[in-house]
Length: 203
Image (cartoon, rainbow, N blue to C red; front, side, top):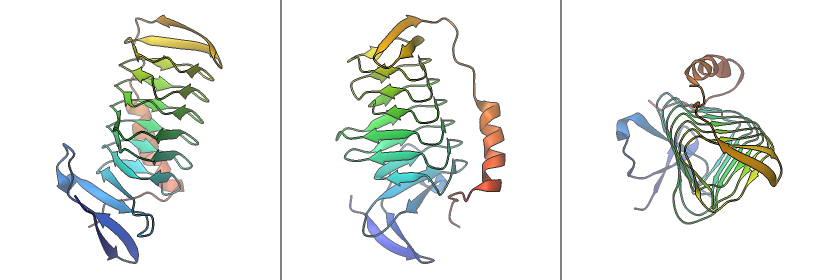
């Protein structure tokens, strides 16, 4: 379906019918520029700082928080991000394949981590400066420790924990699930708008 360009209050918006499961009345389109021809679909309740870098066809679910200086780049295929996720500063989420990258709900991406995985389920944590390659998929409740480099061509078992540094990492399965981030999301939703411009729904 072709996008149409409209100028609203001096900004160019690429508008097109949505194929997501969300009610279109709950989704806004945040335009970047007519020259770039990119768009981001942001659900009501999401906190997306204007200083983050969104490129390509991106969908962001309700109550997901994206900090300034985070980069979400859909180079070829789209990126769909679910609800209640936290994406911190300097995080890079990149989809360089033509297939859709899907990120589920209640995930945390800590400062300066780099993620190219095509599928991430629910309740996962990618810690600071970790790297997850495009051939690795996360199921649910996985933790990729700080500075770990995970490049295995598999879908990780639920509760997988990686720890170590660089490519010299160890793994085990933990019985405890990562704690819920509801309180942190509530806190960020109140604090970030006091210090940063937030992309808000239109009308």
